[in-house]
Image (cartoon, rainbow, N blue to C red; front, side, top):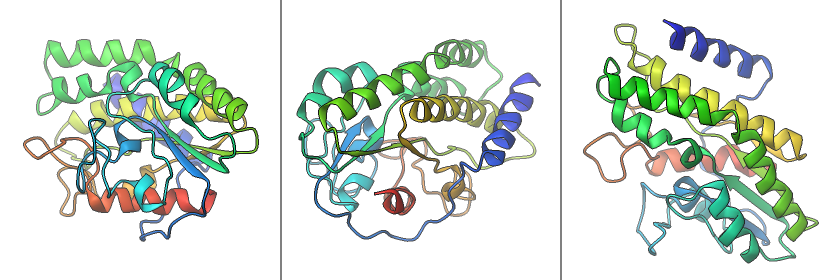
Length: 246
C-alpha cells in the first residue's frame, strides 16, 4: 500500500542522512542554564509524579536533564510555544530543547482513529488530514527555533523528533500507517531545525524494539495512563539521546 512505501521510504532516507541516534542508557544532568519548551513530551507526560496543570512530571527527559525551568505543556502547538513559552525563556539560557509539532498536525487523532484498526474511514481521514498539515511543520518549527535564538542569543538549541509508537508486525498494516505518519512528521521537524541552524536529535533508533506490542515497551499503550506517551524507560532513552548535544 502507499502508506507502507511512504513510511519505509522515509525511514530509509532518515537512516541515510544519519539522523538515527542509538543509545538508551540513563543520562546525567546537564549543566545549569538548560531550559525545555514544547508539548507533552517536553513536559514529561506519561511517567512520574504529575506536578502541575500542564502535566509536567519529575520523570520526563527535561527533569532528568535538570531543566530550569521546564516550560513544556501538554497539548502545546508551535503557536502556543511562541505565544506563552518562548517569552519565559531566560535570556541567559545556555541550552534550550524543543519538542513540538505533533499537535500541529493532529497526530493524536491518528493514533486514536487508527489504533487498533487502520482499515476504517476514520483512520484514512485522520491520516490524510495529518499528512496535509505536515508540509507546514518545517516552517513552524523553524519559527520556534528562530524565536528562541532571538530571545536567548547565546543558547544552543536542540530540537527532538518523536519515537515510533508501534512495534513492527509483519501480519498487520497498522504499524506502517501510524509509524509512517510519525516518520513524515519527524522529517519535517528535522528540516525546520536544519533551516534555523539548530541541532536535531532523532529518537527512532533509541526506541527500536521498544514500541507498543514489543516484549519491553517504552511507550504507554491504550488503557494505560497517558497512552501513546513514553514511560519512565522511554524518557531515559530521550534523555540519553539529548544529553550529548547539551
